[in-house]
Length: 277
Image (cartoon, rainbow, N blue to C red; front, side, top):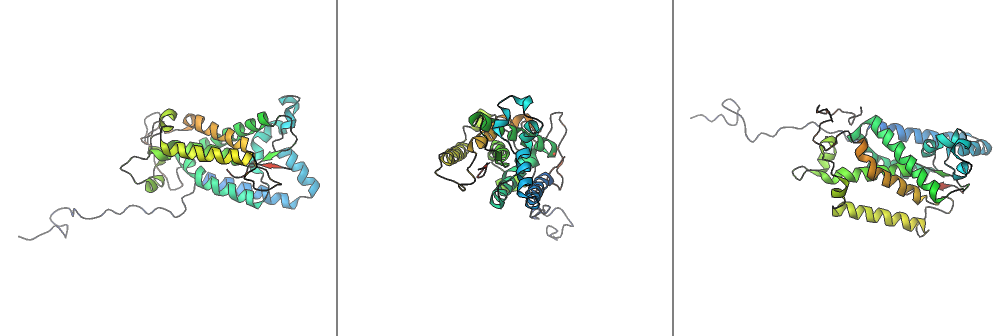
């Protein structure tokens, strides 16, 4: 009797391996790339300004606690816009590079899961709470805070809410390149029972507290705004579920419609610097 198992003429070839679509080497959401480009353009612009112009630019863009001593509505337009604009300023190329790398590492996963618009809004909210934490702990100070590390701390907090929930039958690294919306989002109380999450929380918190005590420093001219880091991190940890369009995972939206993955990473949105996030 003729054997057709290898030729496919008499039935399926059971040992045949199905080729999966090749993943791009750099699977970075457009929103992340745009933000990093904007950070770089703003930083480059400052080199074109005179020292006096740069000081005016810094005052208008940075978050400065002393603005609010006489009340929010007495702080001028910058009192409102600086809650967001301070994220786009960086002290030097090292500060810019560190924040860009951390945004690539943590922000990409969050952006792929919740989409462009929600990601940008989530980042703004984390940056807002980071600024508020700095305002409360540095009330009335004239020293400004700049940098996106508060928002990036929120990205990190959001990422640990779901990256450790990859189903045991999936390969973690491969899953993180696939449909991140299909990963279940555990309730916060349940996530905090995971030893890996607790370890990251402990290390991250200890690093920031030690930085605040001056034991670790990026430089005398750029002290770390660790309170802003904590504010952004706590906001990301507590509020991510509000922005998570995946709900409890499973790859479906709240209305039951299935998510479709696209090739763009599912895009549908003395100066204190907050370095070292």
